Length: 113
Image (cartoon, rainbow, N blue to C red; front, side, top):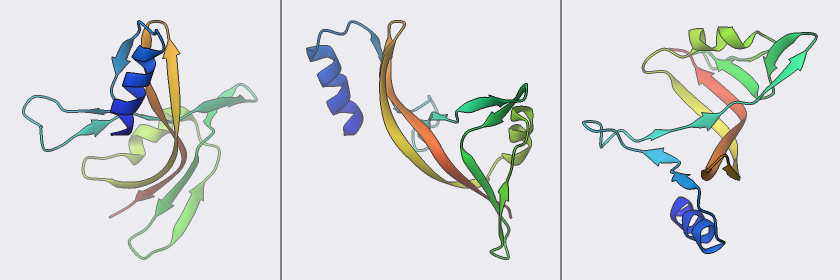
C-alpha cells in the first residue's frame, strides 16, 4: 500500500522516472515475494565495512554483535533458509531515471540454526 501511494505521488509531482517496486514477484514464485534491502557501507581505514548493526543469534538465544568485518564476508552468513530480523527505514529516491522506496537496514539479526 505504501509503495502504491508513493508511486502515485511521484508521478503526480512530475517525475518521469521508472518506478521500482519494493516487493517483486518472480514467475513461478508468486507466493514468495522478494524485497531489496539496502545495507549501507562506509570506508574505515581503507576497508569497506557495514554501517548497519549486524548481530548473530544462536539457537540457544545467545546474541553476538558482529563488529567491523569486511563486506565480502556477509555472503557467508546468508545460507538458504536463514531467518533474518530487520529494523529498517523507508527512504524514497528518484535518481538516474529510477524511482522507488529504498528499505535501508539499520539493524540485522541473523538467526543461526
